[in-house]
Length: 503
Image (cartoon, rainbow, N blue to C red; front, side):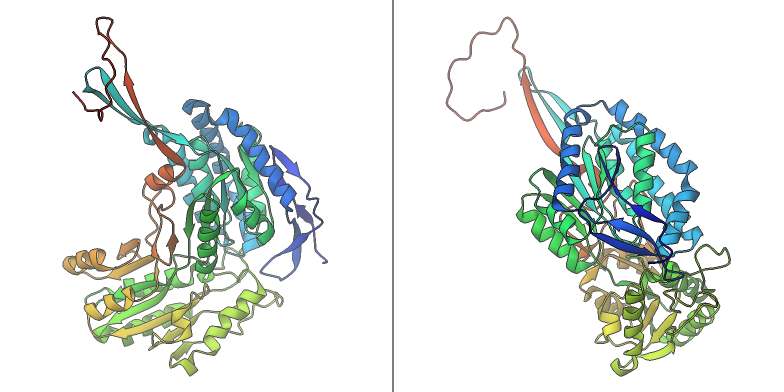
């Protein structure tokens, strides 16, 4: 384990806490393959300690004023903005994405912090007066208590910030279980929250594997669980947490399609396809992984995509000239490569084969180049699975209707896009396509913070999308209060066993 420079510990009760389980995992620099960090894996007792700290903190935080909560979040936002480069560097060092992409991730997380700073509007409630004689009815929303977030490796800062700012602003306390592959960003966020004045125990971080996850899913004091990751794990999270009586939002995998109509600007479509398919080395749940070319545009579109893809510079994420970095692990690199290796046997035309790509001076890195597959049948493994790497499949159809039917037949329904100059076709598409997020000439339709993020079908388990209004509703529960203050002149109404009626 040469090159190890630090150990990432848990954050419990407002301070760094060394792991006591004795179990640790390696964190590698994807550009070199070297282990640079060790991360402590939590035991059941350590998870229990984090939940206990959150439960203790909830006793006061859940009753704290909205002005106190938002004051802390405003300070956190300022600190986050001031440290965005530092956080981006931590992300690049452990995830491998280029620095500009990491900065973009932090910026999108800031959007949700902005939303949380204005949570007072979302929590203001409703009041109806005189619904009956001297009777008023009000609707309020209250926090749940201790809530947990289980987040993936591909956005180690942004996805946690999709969750905890809203949860904390609503009055909950939070336990985060980030990916063990790139844990350092989460600890930096914890330190900044403490510096902003967040009371001890309101935000906690436990690292680890299935032991930590399962304990959060079954812990009786955890009221709700948020998750982002692959579909099999999302299904497991939803099933297990629900069986333990918890509210759950579990965002799963994706196979995002981009439908290109014959009237589309093919240069713009090709630019968008390359950017959306190969950005962050394809390790995005909103990456475009399947382009559906309608009519005769397929050959020209594939040629334009190939021309652009061949010019992408691959290298270390901390090199300003790099446009795409390595994959997160060597094992994941090999799995992604296997889809390309088997593509021809599945009936695909391999236009670009990025497997075997190397970067001079970084022989141990988790490198893979850009791959492009054409004439991909829907039976091909490269089409059926979520590859989560820089592999783009192109499918051919004759009509718009065939294209929509192909997209809707996918078990995934996260995001999709259409490229066209025809407003009528675009309007039809946004109504007819079965996906939670739709882009019109926008390849990665990730909503802004005040709209909610979430898919359909096997891309979402649970009733709530994440952040936006759905986020506020997920982290609170409604209560309706009916009030009557009798007038001094009232005479006793007497006993009435009939069903109450409004008069």
